[in-house]
Image 1 (cartoon, one colour):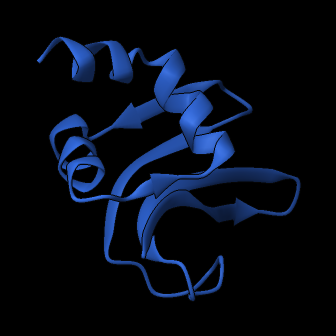
Image 2: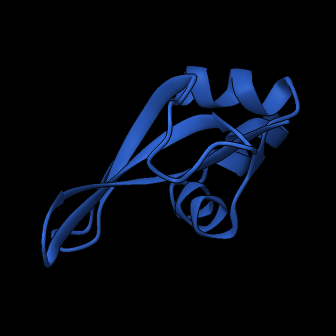
Length: 83
């Protein structure tokens, strides 16, 4: 099963996160299938590759709780429901 989850990057006390499509059995820092965006909680910036995220969601990927909240704030699910 594939999940959309956060992968921690950056230095100590200055974390940024990549949003990645990753196999459930992999570790948080493990090998991922594809990078689909990033999230910087300090600067409150988000970049999302929307077509790739929609592709993985259509194929059955499940976002984690935090990634779901990020996608909801970006109004990705409104876009998905209207299409």
